[in-house]
Amino acid sequence: MINVSVCIGSSCHLKGSYDIINTFKALISENHLEDKVELAAAFCLGKCIDGVTIKVNNELITGVNTQNMHEIFEKHILASLNI
Ligand code: FES
Image 1 (cartoon, rainbow, N blue to C red):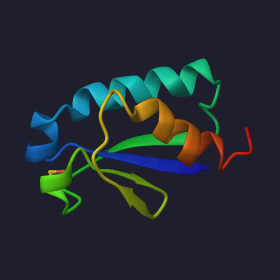
Image 2 (cartoon, rainbow, N blue to C red; image 1 turned 90 degrees about the horizontal axis):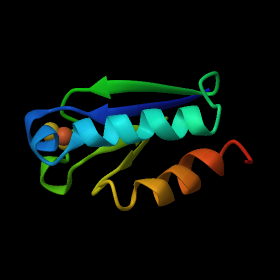
Image 3 (spheres, helix red, strand yellow; image 1 turned 180 degrees about the vertical axis):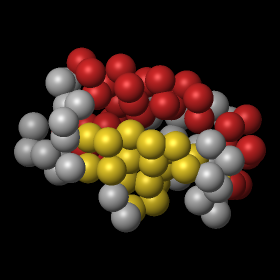
């Protein structure tokens, strides 16, 4: 199981974490990964200036936006699942 937390602290929220969560949800369902990826919201992950910040297992990834999300999903989620 891969745990993904998306920061919904105020700074990341303003930078669009809501859209990131929705895009993640869509990607998880398109790839039928509901059993393999757990998506959660997190409070401030301490990298506000570089947000939106997400945490994939224990790795923090900053600067996430709807443009680079697909690449991040492939690199950090699909690749770890060997898909
Ligand atoms: S608000 Fe997201 S890292 Fe601080």
